[in-house]
Length: 167
Image 1 (cartoon, rainbow, N blue to C red):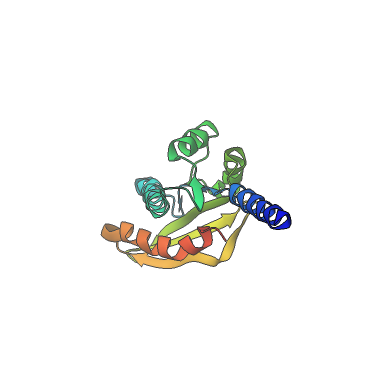
Image 2: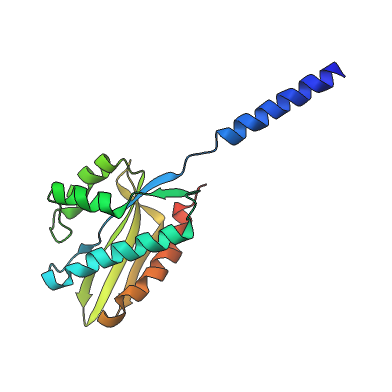
């Protein structure tokens, strides 16, 4: 009986330890999308895509079980302080300075361009350690009319979300 109680106490302690060491959620920064054509009047889409993707990701995991989203206000303040602009051709390299300061483990961002009367939108999850997009979880070649560009957001979430869930 004493051996049984000792074994039971050991298993209980092991279970409590395993439960308390639950993996922390992944820290994710959703950055503004890069405006590839550089026309200033289209800059609004950089931030609207960022906001919409952020809100949809937040709605997918409101309890922060799989991931923690860095608040957009923090990202915008840091980008402004560092003078990092998504219309600048150097944005893809400059953004890593901000990502390092935000201590994000993954980054969700993308780009868009305007061709033939349609927006071409791409979105990626970047691994911050390698600074490369995850190959399995990308939303590429999404074409949308100018009046329906935000309809791309659910498609982006559908393709990226599996890469953001805890393994």
